[in-house]
Length: 477
Ligand code: XLS
Ligand code: NI
Ligand code: NI
Image 1 (cartoon, rainbow, N blue to C red):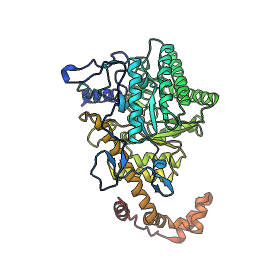
Image 2 (cartoon, helix red, strand yellow):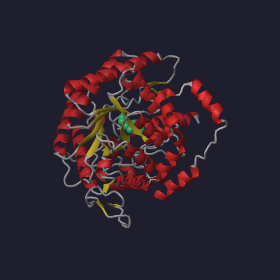
Image 3 (cartoon, helix red, strand yellow):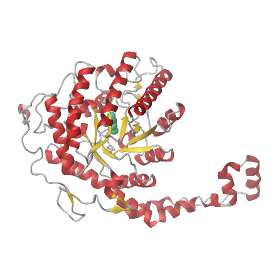
Image 4 (cartoon, rainbow, N blue to C red):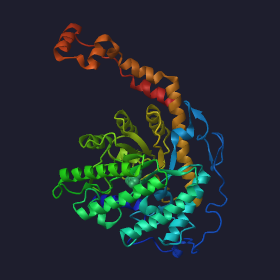
């Protein structure tokens, strides 16, 4: 199992921006039947024959149509598109290859030429925008190094990024913008001990420079949020780690990000994305509660919110609903990385969500939060290794969008029906009394409570009605 575990850790890093540097992308796999383009200019459409995806309703049998997601339809006083604020993750959709630690890539999209050149980066960006247009989503998310190749120097990397960002800005026109941008601080070997928590000051500085630039381009593109996912901000062993010092460094890094955001006039939300482990043995932003504690300890509450990823939630031993509620009740729910794990595979499989119950619970939190704006739902999800046709990119996103849309409809039904809320209200009704209110107001001192306990005698403990709660929930799906 140990060997398996190491391989699993490798999987996580391989899902993101495969072949960005060093080893580079695979060469054109003629032997595997891969069809690689070699022309500089891409003629015509990237997704020929695929129309703009429309809503056709639940009875439609057309796989290239929405059955539940009807962007303009109002649910609980808000258009579906405004509840969802969907976003496409560039790294999975345009850099994912289906490769895993046990096997070579399985996907070679027709527009790939087997290189990681600037010309290729630009062509991919054009494919991204054609996809956004056809799927009807007006937000996208990126890491700096997914969209533009690393250069020999920081200056060269920045120049590459500027060139691709200029094209993205043009292609965005007026209606498309990033839901969030981020810096990739986990792929390059310099980040092997982390970025902000590296033991090496030079790396800390390099990470800061990369985040500075990524914040600038996110701002330039009209991004609504900026994400920090600390893939390698953690440790492999406490024996050689000064955890207190590393956490202090991470906090200083966050403070500098806040200062820079203000300096450049970026009004987007800064988001921290918790994850318990992968690729480190233990990541500092383990889960929502741990991250909230970090923010509170260092006086950063109010400057950051959380980006909750469902697959990370289950990796930390919680449900996605738990993580969303923890973030929400602390005023920290900012964004959702909408994906799901696999109950039989132990790592971050980043699958599109297909479970209607899970989607309904997710949407219950979102509704209670009054929506997510300026956050939204980023599909941090990838096609299965075995799904290899261009059409599968559409099918995967349609299925993910429909699942969440169905979740929204079910959650709205539950709220409108009111019986679940009534069950919860009744459960706590003893606190709705005069004495209960005093206790909740902090006036329940122990002497008073002892007198009451003696006067009341053995309390009658009511039923939690858990099965009834489940029945009500099920009937809304
Ligand atoms: C990896 C994370 C990553 C972040 C962005 O597990 O989910 O994709 O969302 O760096
Ligand atoms: Ni994520
Ligand atoms: Ni993830």
